[in-house]
Image 1 (cartoon, rainbow, N blue to C red):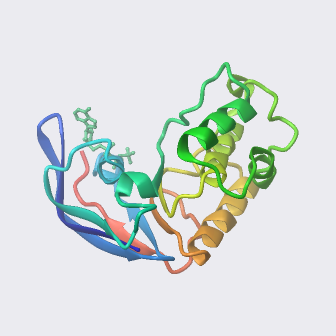
Image 2: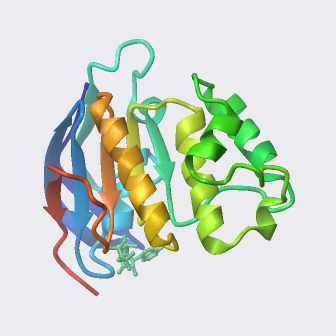
Length: 202
Ligand SMILES: Nc1ncnc2c1ncn2[C@@H]1O[C@H](COP(=O)(O)OP(=O)(O)OP(=O)(O)O)[C@@H](O)[C@H]1O
């Protein structure tokens, strides 16, 4: 599978945020998107996820077959918000996402264990600390297999141990043929990742 962006442009509020951006990612590859505040990293990720229209250029996935005919079908988008209901338990939230996106081999319990949250699946999501919420959101990536992970500041709020654990998860995802596009100000420990540096700050 390949994710290809050519001459891509993004706008917010009618203003050009970036233009002429391109990259190509293949199975097993990661792209780290860096750049100053306001340079358009989140905008780019949202455009790739299909949450914002592109202003110009081409964006496509190739080789996804019947299972992943579009980028939207192939991706998980982990934005700044965790997209979990605070009043539902952690496990209920994950079960919702598993049912919604389609489940794979990993159960909700497996995923919680993997992110170091075994034993607190029964707690309302709203009770969790900032880092625990992020780890629960990361567990969403595990309960439904999707080849393309779009990650916006994925390690914000994580402690060192959790950063290391997540780095291992990303490495495993790529080793299994997955692709990652991650916007970050922090090193993610993604060995061999390509880098896309966004330009203009504001
Ligand atoms: N809804 C909006 N309407 C108008 N302008 C917006 C809107 N959302 C974002 N912007 C502007 O678009 C630009 C790019 O924002 P974006 O969030 O993509 O940057 P970023 O590189 O992810 O920044 P950061 O490193 O701070 O997360 C900024 O100048 C921002 O103010």
